[in-house]
View 1 (cartoon, rainbow, N blue to C red):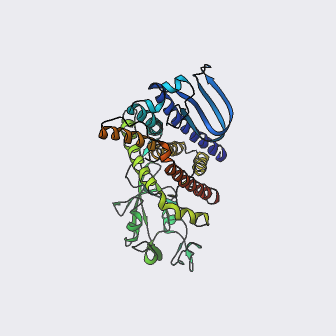
View 2: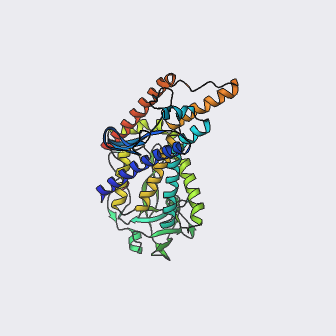
View 3: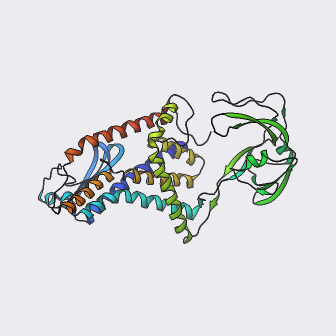
Length: 410
């Protein structure tokens, strides 16, 4: 199932790219432009067909390297050779600015639409994680308790010092999977439970939820020394307090919808995911040191970027555990990322071409005369720099994914 999940996610990525290019093609056809070719992949042609067969038909096909796709619209720039009267008449650079902007935005727009549809489907079937609602705390393990432990490091985890005593939580009847809703009558979540337990005195009354039923379990803690992060987060300090001997996991809070309420839930969730994606794109340069450290063998952070290879591996993990709602949410997030990256206002991204169209329109409005299309040769150096930077970054991410991939589950 892991291998099938990887293959399924990779195919979904390729389908998302094909869907992006469909947006450009359909918008170009709708606005009277000439589409010459629509291909999936790059490199040598494996298969192609022209529909209709006449000279002005579109060549559809598949190329050998499934690393993307393209839609060839006649006359995207002045550098484009126009071979037929139809191409010269319908050249993209001759069209009105709004038509060109519509065609250029249609690709990212299709990714946004697909992402929202995937989120809507998950909302209808499994529900969506509640936005800005802390996850619930759950018992992930009930092990023995040491009254003191060694200081953990990157190389070695914390180890018991002296005798390991039976877990008070296990003795009180707590089980793995129990959701802890309150500590001594005060509601807690995954963010607040540690402090609530640490600040407790005497017997601890835990309000838990098991199999949908609420109950209260009283635990008699023991005193032990533990390691906690310092206020600045740069080191660890030893603290003394009550211990009940549990590992704390998280259970996301899920909102469920019907066909109507899912519309609002999808809109809010998609907007939130989009905001997080924009922030993540802005932080890409800051992640370079973490990627280099990961390649060197240090722990890989979950917030580091992933290539399509790494994303497919995550897809394999969730399919292996039958977590299809997570699979489709990951795919939705990928589509939002593809759409937003393509809107970056630098060539060769769609946003770069849109910026050129907007520049031409503003220039004509200011000068009061039509200045014609921008000479793309003047933008060539910027394009090459962007391609080099983007290519180098993707190579770095791909190397990290191969050498030290992100794993959601141990």
